[in-house]
Length: 202
Image (cartoon, rainbow, N blue to C red; front, side, top):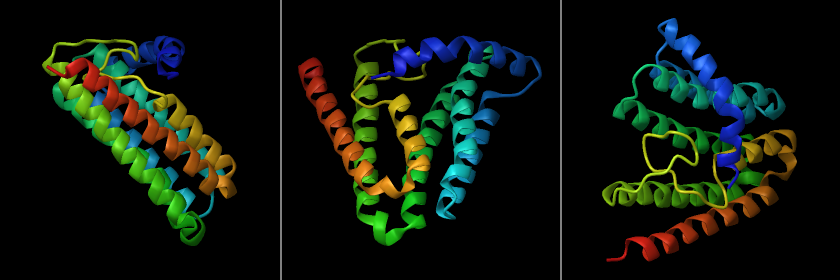
């Protein structure tokens, strides 16, 4: 819901930085994988019961997630680069809840499983919608220039990163926050399915 507004703020500085990195020969794929590495470091810190320390690599990984696209736009966008980017994003979104479950399995296990199931459902609805949109020739740049169609929803990337930050700051509230956020993810996916039925039913 907030991605289109966030992009207006972060795209100009990211594009400028991306042009500088591209001029130095740094590739978009390298930045994508660097972001995944940083996300993995954040997950390790969380699993070791140091979620506030995890905030730094977590946020840097999300900067990398925006920066890889800026570098690609400054050089050459490839289908594989877009594929790698979305695959890494989904892995990152799974690593953080998993790390909180590992940090405290007894306390966070049930809520973490519910949250991951909601991410799975939401991700499937997102990718399925993108396939249908491509098939029907639909285009959008509301969330910036992307390699695939980004359908909007109640919860998008901006809300999810904000949620992860809150979890790192208030780890003892992981369970109740995850039940609520997971329910909203299920609602987002359900609404996307409903929208797809209205638009793509022939």
